[in-house]
Length: 202
Image (tube, rainbow, N blue to C red; front, side, top):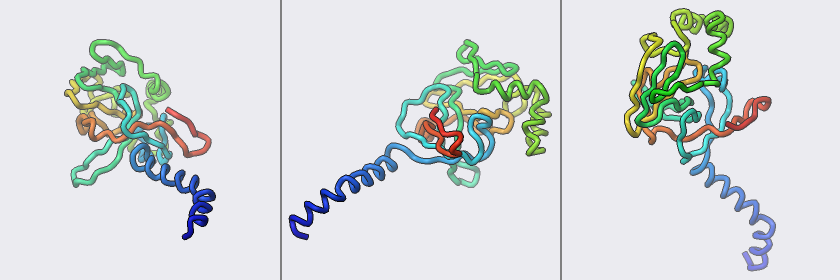
């Protein structure tokens, strides 16, 4: 390729090539796509919705994050949950009231399902799944521990995070599998891009 041909190529395709390179690098190191699997974050996030997570952000209470979880077979999966307890926190629930380090904290994102639980124990909302209906019938409150106790306290170790799904009845989270290290939290959910009628930021 002659010098003139190279200059022509750079002029015509340089910006395009740089844009593609930046996109690839940002995809590798800055952000990534994730798909919601299941109903544990209902109604905030629905099954099969498409999200964008950002790596290397500071972690704050109530952020929605993507974490890596290793199951009994050793397979690593990505889960989407909400940060409830920060390192060193004492997290308590009593009859659906959250207390963190002795202070009552509102969970406004639970309002719709709390109301539905009080009305009919979510039987109408869970009409699509009889197993979920049975779980809700068995539960004395919307948020319980893994043993269906309405009152429980968790001390979050240093360097660890207590994660829960917004649909407390069906979510398998830190109540069942324990806390998550910072290294296991791989990104914070920032954008929902599908379905198109639900596009938005968090």
